[in-house]
Each structure stands twice: as structure tokens, then as C-alpha cells.
Image 1 (spheres, rainbow over the protein chains, first blue to last red):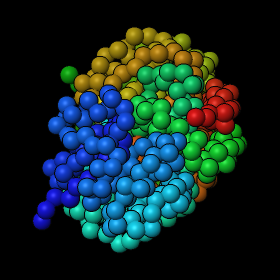
Image 2: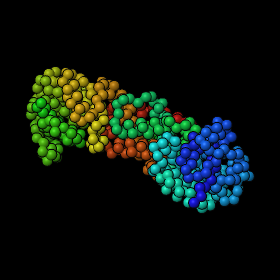
Image 3: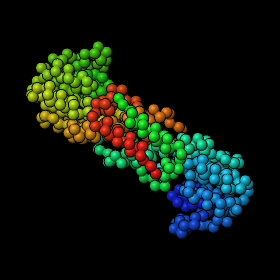
Image 4: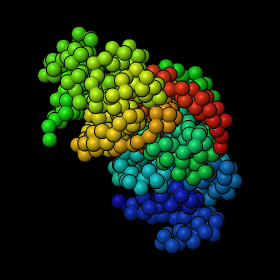
Length: 240
Length: 240
């Protein structure tokens, strides 16, 4: 089987992780207007392309922060050819799904995804990490997903963009907000139980995430704020 | 070296764990007025004693809930002999320390302790688990503590009852309250990151603790309520 060609639109932290994980299995093209990113890609031995060259790719993966989606998708749209699969990896799913559906031509297949991991959690290997898939248009995502499951050992979770955002508000948004609130409470004492050590380890993972990730999983997800208010109320009222 | 005699006053969950952990190293006596507890002790091959027989012990360990301290210490006091070490294992330290200092005779040594583990966390072994010690009177606790460090692999943390209670409010009180607040938010979705899985695992450990433990580490610790209110405020205000 011939290796598919994968164009990464955006070569930030997640684009680099994707290239690392898939370079043995795909021909990888990097499209990023930032000169440091282009230099980093060349240093990694990857081919840097201009936007029109995405036509060469079988899969176009958007590794962009949500605020850049509108402009980038409009610029990308004229260069896409029929049958390509366009996917994203943003931390919320309803907004990017709507943008892809509205701004990209009907002749491309669409898949919204959320890899529930980043460079830090994938450093120990990808086996067992979760990849959320929200199929939007076309069916070729199935064999791409099966390939990722087999090759990287990812656990696949198929859902809708709306359900993703509701669930991620709970598991990811609240976790980031709790990590921040606990950090603001001041340093934790040495006195600790085993459960507290696990908590501390978990919150440390989250605190090390890039600020863009924090913004994306909290502010960009409309389901977070009401849940945050509810948890704050429950916490204030909790008693023995 | 002859095995010391250890009298456990109270044979609930923690008394049983202590007997299991130390029966190879101590002659163990059980003093508990409850008939089911006495039966359980006999089934475990342990000698059940009446209160006056605590005079036989080198170490008297109070494995009681805080509300039972006043009455039990008053009943115990006349039977203690000079040079015995009396210690407790309650989840807060200022209140039991004051009760031991006020109600027990000057001729016994006193040590307040808080094992930062229970039957569940100790099930995988005690190595690396924390034992908090607040020396109150006398110096024989040093060799007893050194023995526990060597034999059970416990990490010792020496502090004062007041500092213990302030620190435990943060690491133990808040953890239990957060576990309860998150439980009341409803079941967690399948969608999750590695950090969320760690959190879930940590909170599950805490949720499985006995209700008395929850009461003891939240309601009985006066430093918890103000910290709880502050964390609720920080959480409500946290934003991207």
C-alpha cells in the first residue's frame, strides 16, 4: 500500500507531534506562513509547501488555533480538489465543524477530530490515548481512523461536535479551571495522601499545557461557564 | 530485642489495619467495648483485654473517632502507668492533642500522629506512604518512629498539630470536598485525557473512604471551611 500524503496546515506544537507520530507512515507536507515554523520543518527534514500545493495531499490536517480558522479556510478552499479528506484537531468541535462545513467546497470530505493528548501525554507513548472523531461528510475517515487505532494504539471515540463540547467542558474545561484555582490558592504542603499525590500529578500535567490550550478548552467552549458556576456552587455548599 | 506490647484502643477499620501491619513486630492487645469488634479481634487471633489491662502495654494507640476521645481518655487515664507512650491516629491533630494533654497523666509520654493512608491505599503496600508525627511529650517516639520507617517503609513528617491541621485542610479536606462536588455534578463522560483519568482515579479513592473519614477531614478541621470558600471563589472567577 502506498503511503498517503498528509499536508499539515500549521506547524505548532501539535503539528510537530503529528509529524513525529506519522512520518513513518505518511509523506508529510508542511504549510505554515511563519518563518520560524518553516525553518523548524526544514530542520526536521520535512517538505515545506505553499498553500496551492495542498492539492497534492490525500489528507489535509488543520493544526491551527480556532481564531485562525476563518481566514485560513477561506484561503485554502480554492486549492482543494475533489475527494480530499480535510480534518482539524481543535479542542472544541462545534465551531470548527461549522466553519469547515460553511467555508470548504462540497467536493471534499470533512472530519472534525480532537486528539485528547498533546506532546506531554504522548511522550510516554500513544497507546491507549483517546482520539475523538466527529464525522461530518464522506466515509473515507473510517479506514484512516482504523489505521491510527492499529498503528498508534489510539482509542477511538465517535461522537457529534455538540456532544463532544458538552463532554469536554466537564473533563477538560473544568480540569484546567480547577488546576488554575488550586494554583492560585498557593503552593501545596508536603503533607499528602496517595490520592492527593495523584491529583497533584494530574493538575501538574494540565498546568504545563500551553496558554492557547487553556484558552481553547475553557473560553472557546460555551458549555464550560455554566458548568464552572455549578461546580463552584456545589463546592461552596459541600459539607460533612 | 523483645517485641513491644501494643494496646489498640478501638478495633475499627484503622485498628484492624494497624494490627495487620504490626502483628509480626508487636504483641498486640485489643480494647474495644463493641462486641462485634471483640469477636473480630478474637477471630484474627488477637488477645482482647479490658481497660485496666492497658497497663501491660508499652504503647497505647488510640484508634478512635474524635467524638469518643473525651470519654475514652477519662476512663483510660487511671490505668496508665509511668513511661508508657500514648499515641492517636485521628485525622485532625489540634483537638486530640489538647485532649490527650489535658486528660492523661503527666507520667505518660504523648505523641499525636496522622497516618496519611488507610486500608485502601495501604493495600498495595506501605512503602512510601506518609506518617505525620506531632511529638507532644517525651522522647521515646523517636525509636518507635525509626522502627516504622525501616520496617514499613513509611515516610515520616514531623510537624505541630496546628501546622498539620492547616496543611491537611488543603491536601485532604479540599480533596474530599472536591470529590463530593464533582460526584454531585453527575457521572463523568467517556471522553477523557490522561490527566482527567488520573483525577478520576484519585477522586475515586477518596469517594470510597468511610463516611467518618469524610466528616473527620472536613467538618472536624476548622481550617477547611475558609479554604473551601476561597477555592470556590477562585474557581468561579477562573477564566481564560
